[in-house]
Length: 276
Length: 276
Image (cartoon, rainbow over all chains, first blue to last red; front, side, top):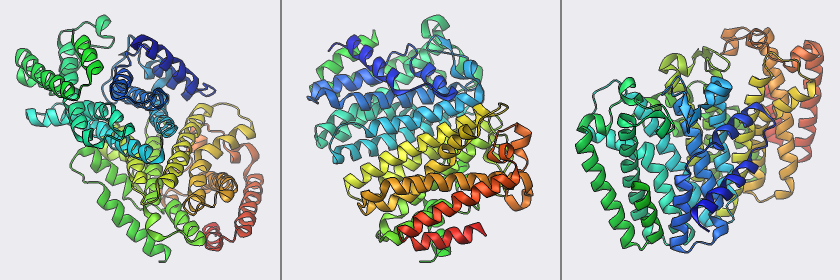
């Protein structure tokens, strides 16, 4: 299956997850079924293909990650947090459904992520490991988001900001990178893949910061210039644009080297395309 | 161990869960470690004792339930939802830490609940069943809370309101009542116990509604008179106080009869004391 076919089938499966009989489910579906790029599910698919995981095991972790990621975006966009009215090229959840429903829709997608993950047709030991890493990773994402809020308007050291990126953006990528090793019981690869995911997440976040500085709303699909307006300490703000670009390039190279050493070739090809 | 000793040890264990190095963790600890009655953990303890579950299996599900319950209270109390400034006898989380941190603290406790549940020292099959029921139950709680918000200011049928109570309050009690059957692999009791939990939850919610109508803030530990002020359709508003009391009495009797038929005697004693 190519990536486009995978995303199409993933979106169909996610459409069937939510029955929309209540307003909160409509809000959940609105955010989940918007035109997200599904980078995390595609990464999971490619890693699993590279490692030889059978296809029927891939869907539930891929959906769980996208459900949780969407939940975190809904809460991040709230007026009480980042106050972003635009997401994935259309009005944010709270703009359409109100702040109350957006808070609850984020909660709902978060909880549904765990329901969906637990329906992975894997053996109980692998499922328990998936659950363990998913619950820890999502908790780290949350702590990272809260560090981001706490740091706003404050002077912060570059190491604090990178630690925040590792949690906020890296932790969920760590889960994505580690899934293949868990499902194939290649536990000797686990720590390395968790670290690769974390480093990739820091790179990904810096690229996002750079878009915020120099992108346009219609290209980026969300409101740009928010970091500066909110007084957020970012790697770009601290290092300056050029040095941040160099730093990101080094992270990216280290990710590629490690993925190549594990022969994760489809993932490498995808990341090369993603960078362009 | 008596119930007081259990609650004391539970509170000590929960104190050690959160390291408080970030502001969001301080907010989580503030709400979690307030003077809650810990009714759900105590119920779990008594059910497990009645069914012969070994003690070391009880703590993690009991903490997970209290973590999730506290998370749902934090989000419920937000100005965007029920706007309750008082909880468990002191200012609500958002009053002390701000709306942004309260949203994230609720998320954090929710996610930590799953981390903690997964550390239950049970076999993988039982853990997978615990996870399955916990993720479904917590999702139902969320849908129930969102129905509560959606119903506010609207004319609603008594059946809609009871269905909302079953989800909002009953679903987590269902999980509490079912834990013993899962951990003792007495799966033939599972459906009955899930139903008992759901019925008990409806009773519990009606008693809560009655306190909201006739209680005083200082006795109830939270702001009273909110349901009417918010225009919420409740069983009490629809049936009237006396008929709601009768209805609740019938639910209570049916719960006791069923628990007695399963010889869950410690639970029966606890519920009798709770009613008084």
